[in-house]
Length: 263
Image 1 (cartoon, helix red, strand yellow):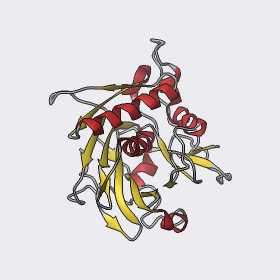
Image 2 (cartoon, helix red, strand yellow):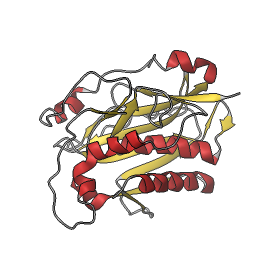
Image 3 (spheres, helix red, strand yellow):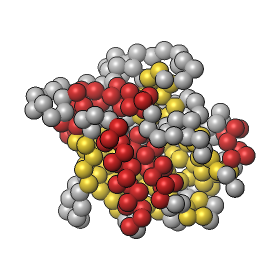
Image 4 (cartoon, helix red, strand yellow):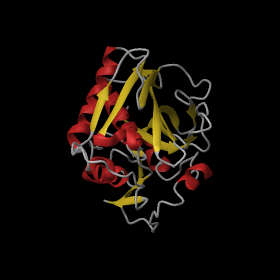
């Protein structure tokens, strides 16, 4: 059976709450469903709500320009703090077999090749810290994770949770990836597609309001890879970081100036 993927947003953080100095935003959930539900689901985010108040307050002084979305646009969430200076973020995995880790590295490589100045560096070891932590899960939903959770719209197969510092900049992100849905194990190519979408969230992207884009709520066999619009969104979110990449010149962090990019 041909399948499509549905992305939704969950109200209030489902992950373990961060320390008091960090403010979490709502996670982005990635839901897998048969294609016969894709059309109905694409305009029905059963768990969709507006961002949490803490997220809104964090960006209250960022001068974000709000406007009615055009026919095609992608939401822009937020910028990383000074730890991404020179365009580098680190990531590590928690669990996962060889194929799953290969899919993660391939997804990271694709983003680096697409966004000039971006560097995603893998670190390892129990004592090493990372900006982004990826976990793989093949069991049903448990605890604060919704991975493997089932709804009338499908199985949740991906979840990104972003944490903010006291100034409203991204401080770290946690990504959970399911390795199967409806009893079927994902191929490496399918895992890469899921991870690429979730990396987009870690880089400050929300969802596209149209089908056929990597960041779309519904993704199917016609969906492509990283689009020019996705790239523009990442630059809009983190322009201060990426523009100074490799220059060695100190730059001042700044929030995105608009809440979406036109495609």
